[in-house]
Amino acid sequence: SGINFSKYDHIPVKVSGIDPPAAFQKFEDAKLRDIIAANVTKSGYKLATPIQKVAIPVITAGRDLMACAQTGSGKTASFLLPILTKLLDDATDLEIGKPQAVIVSPTRELAIQIYHEARKFSYESYLKISILYGGTSVKYQNESIMMGCHVLIGTPGRLLDFVERAFITFDDTRFLVMDEADRMLDMGFSESMRKIVNHCTMRAEHQTLMFSATFPEEIQRMAGEFLNNYVFVTIGVVG
Ligand code: ADP
Ligand code: MG
Image (cartoon, rainbow, N blue to C red; front, side, top):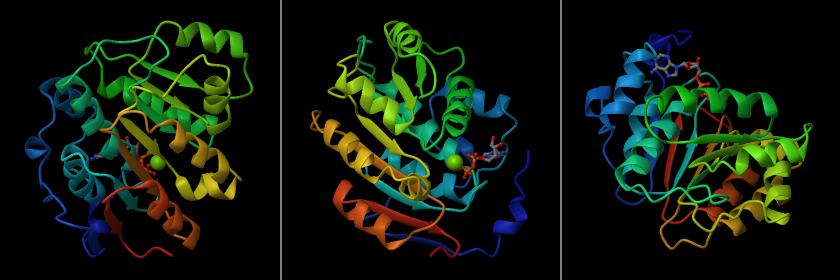
């Protein structure tokens, strides 16, 4: 893979928040479902990256998370693996138009990458993964949504469009991930992010997870606003 693990040897890992769960060292200790762990192995992942070691236990423990780590540090698996595991652990029936996990991504390209990773890690499980993004026909994407999905990945505008058209609701959404939060901000999506968060509060037990490569003031404010009793993780120096 493209990950240079030795470059992380001297990068400081900072964790704050009330009672942060302990990091693991090896994937075998990550408490992943067998089927998910098998797919991790099939993907050729041998060592966990620093963000994976810290973030996976936080998500597994049911906590909200604000995680900052540079691009290419393995943030996608750090949220997908525990979410897929938890969805399999206490599966609820698939309901059309009611995704149990929603992953928000700034661009179509990034959404497609996350989609492929989610497909790879959930391979041979019954979990259904769908994707929504702008620039293609709403009708075509709605046909795919009508098949039902546990995990929905999408860009902010198209996700909100589907909520506003009542094609989907976030009433059963247990996991909301804001990936590349700093980029979403730069692209002018802060109001859309806020709206999505506000649509995701129906379930008493829900987790909100924010990922970012940098930690500008506006992201700090959003973390304070969107997250509850969250664990804050930074890998390396961010600003
Ligand atoms: P980020 O979201 O932090 O920019 P990605 O999640 O896109 O990083 O990961 C970057 C690349 O590293 C991807 O190709 C991914 O498959 C790979 N990767 C992630 N974690 C590991 C790992 N533990 N071992 C090997 N490769 C990994
Ligand atoms: Mg990423």
